[in-house]
Picture 1 (cartoon, rainbow, N blue to C red):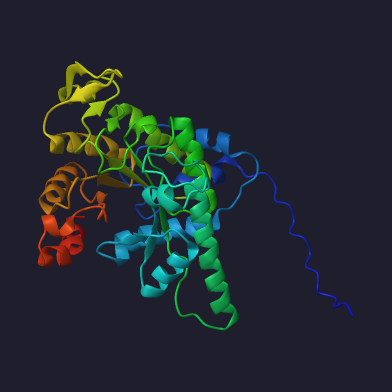
Picture 2: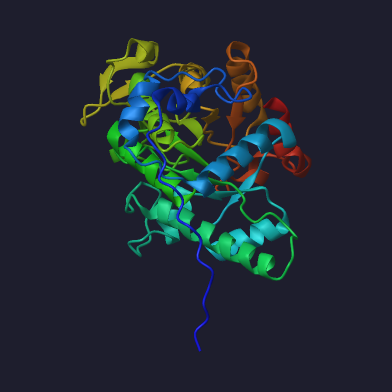
Amino acid sequence: MSTAYPMHPMTPVPGPVSNEERTSDFAPKEGRWDGITRPYSAEDVLRLRGSVRIEHTLARLGAERLWKLMTKDRPYVNALGAMSGNQAMQMVRAGLDAIYVSGWQTAADANVSGHMYPDQSLYPVNSVPLLVQRINQALQRADQIEHSEGKAERYWFAPIVADAEAGFGGPLNAYELMKAMIEAGAAGVHFEDQLASEKKCGHLGGKVLVPTSQFIRTLTAARLAADVLDVPTVLIARTDAESAKLITSDVDAYDRPFITDERTPEGFFRMKGDPMQRCIARGLAYAPYADLIWMETSTPNLEQAKIFAEAIQKKYPGKMLSYNCSPSFNWRKNLDEATIAKFQRELGAMG
């Protein structure tokens, strides 16, 4: 015997939204965009949005929650890398506030090609977005189960920060990848300033940087994608200048103090100068275009972190920073147990 369910009237189709209403999206909201530069206009964004506004609820909720955690609720937010929905569920059960989706882990054992790769961006570009989607779907199922049982033991939708590597190409590639991350529900995304076609793990040799201005175009493309999708995605800019010894070009005058005249057989320029100063120079250049700045380091080093943080925050007070507490570090070789125990707290105090 069939059951008749009550029908709801269709929602009236809204009329056209005025440009005045639509540009209100870009009004500052509780300081969210303080210090952020967008070298494009609201009209540029509206032109790219199309006529239908598509909601990206998980990405929006995650981005807003992550921003609140970082700016109001926690001295710092730490996250572990998840390779499956089940791992992410266990992390939330254990009390972690955020989840990380690592390109290194994705390359090793969580990419859609089914192969095991080194951390060199060899896996299909949609692998990380699809892993983000899988994790969000697992968290959604956990939430549905608790909700159906009348429980409210925890908030399941921990914000996901995803690794976009070096963008898998140029600005258009970064734009499309950022869109895919948001559509999958990522709250934050990080890009690095390596040459995508020569990308290496942050702790491997042979890294090749792109010019500073080129990476700013990557960051701008990623921010534009988030604006077009109308999500306040947390954008993180990572520099690999501490250990990179090569750069593609001397076209950018900003980089020339750190470039020699010597070139490799591939045509790359060799770099010179203090690696810390290279990182600081790039961090300062990226700060107006990203929400957080990340200096990739070869070893766990609080002194390096302190020098970098002070230099960035001297020019950009309150600028938030990110740090890779990598499992590939030889922690005990570099630090004693007491320093390891307080390492993240010390980083949090630096910003």
